[in-house]
Length: 333
Ligand SMILES: [Zn+2]
Ligand SMILES: [Zn+2]
Image 1 (tube, helix red, strand yellow):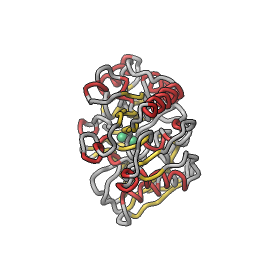
Image 2 (cartoon, helix red, strand yellow):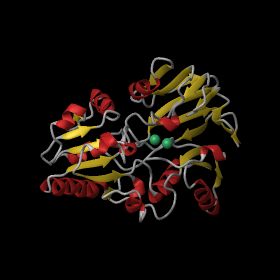
Image 3 (tube, protein in one colour):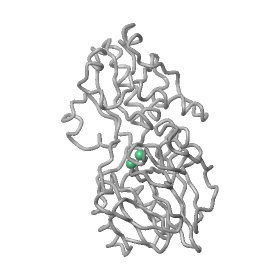
């Protein structure tokens, strides 16, 4: 799959021949362009990498000093080989970007992960007109339509209060970077400590460093847990489920914040007491709207339901294809 010198889908991932750079490559490469700091979009041994200026501190935290990292302000175009490259807000997590590649007046945009709804934490998504659009299709089926996150926030606060009344600790499972910070403003208005698992806590500070307003939090250290956590809200990654660490928080109620909570039966099957439908990805209507807004003549689909989405758009008369199988994976969010 190729779009001129702009973009090529190779076995190893997305590559721009004009810029001689790989996009969100997980293999080590000479020059990488990074949409955002989630692990499935980062390579840990690149020689040099470029990302948005807001993404850079988050990516640096994950990559260490090994990778030479260049943070570029949103909207600022720079030359790379034969191409002009710029980063534009994707609304997914703090610093997440769509990568715009321009060569001779033709434009490719790689969305990375993105959402259209505002979460009060990430820079809001920006429409970037293009010829070829590479879109994630994590939730690319008509059954995925997100409820108003403010309503989910109300449910979340009510859940916390009711657990407090029963003297229980509330444990909300949320991915350490992005979701764990995004849920914090939704907790405002309830009296009680908010404790962050050690994997999510450093990112809270990195968000605050960029001026994001978040309610006060504490780190959920062993000593802090020993002081008692009845009535507290603990934010922890899903990997803590069925661990001794989680047992120390008993009595507790367990809930998950994810788009997958919209799927019937998932919550029960996974053993959560409750679920909150809070996604950092586009739902079906947002996906349709975004493809339309982009004005693209060609659509490349990746992640999740790439096949059905590509088929849908082909029926609408668009040239739509699925990225190589190794690029089509289920998003953990
Ligand atoms: Zn992501
Ligand atoms: Zn992803």
